[in-house]
Image 1 (tube, rainbow, N blue to C red):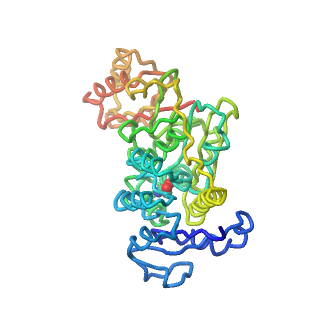
Image 2: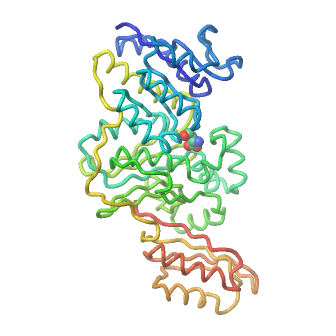
Image 3: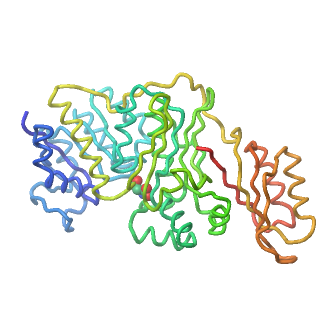
Length: 431
Ligand code: HSE
């Protein structure tokens, strides 16, 4: 075996990066794996536009069947994103005995059960290193480097766009709308940025991390998801005054026999390593039984960073093919100590709450009276401005409280005539 033929479906930003790495690092890769990796065909609906890499025109096609139906192609790299037709292409490639590499976290999160089952049945692999944290080798580390560990928890800043927005708000006093505009201009947001700012992209990635850490392939609907659009610049600034930073955190933590899985804006102490992760950077903080607490950090998006992960999958596959081996790209064993997922109503957390209330005597008494009825205890309270008979922000930090009780209390408080906007509540986390 001297050469492995690969078919690339999706010649966009990351696809061009893969081709570039295979061209520029051809010698290095050949020396490391002893086999030439040959991109035999590239499929894209646009084969005209110039990319920052040049390829022989003859290998370009608009028809995926030219790759899927080519018996000399052993590996298909899917980089078109989205659910359809990516799913159908992957199924057809597996049915034709090809192995898959994909960066498509939305597809694996939604359709992974079916796709991994087909792959298993066909004795083929689906590799997906680029789907979480781009070039950060988190998937391989969970699968191989930490193979003997049990995981207590995973805390991820895994959406670069949201992290960029929150960092701009915190560092440059930008409003949410201004920061989102900048993120779009820089081009790291998904085609539909609501996936980023709504927390869905983080949830997709969290599903893959949970599968690798706890052996459970959960569904998007199993995850409580809250995005960042309700976070105001004032919340970011008040949090800073309290020594806290707001991050969109993807959390999966074991609590006795339950797994608590959620994505939401979270307040963490400013001196925690995760609080210093800024801009489009991603970080995944993992708590393990053997290796202790680990932090994986790096750019969470970018052409060469994501392409670096795809090439690492390629090398894994090629090495196995050369050795005539089959090693599962999953290597997951369910954590039997977990019997169920924790419901969001059942979690207990400390909270930051911002009320917008009329500035007049007795307001605090009304709010705290309702909180007390639900057994919720206040740790601190600050009225941020003084404007007699007008609306002012009141910021409270609550002691550990049950989410369900807090929601019930807030829904009563929001109905008071002294309250002019629904309260903003942000969970705090001791990572
Ligand atoms: N849109 C994603 C992010 C990048 O902002 O992190 C690709 O996963």
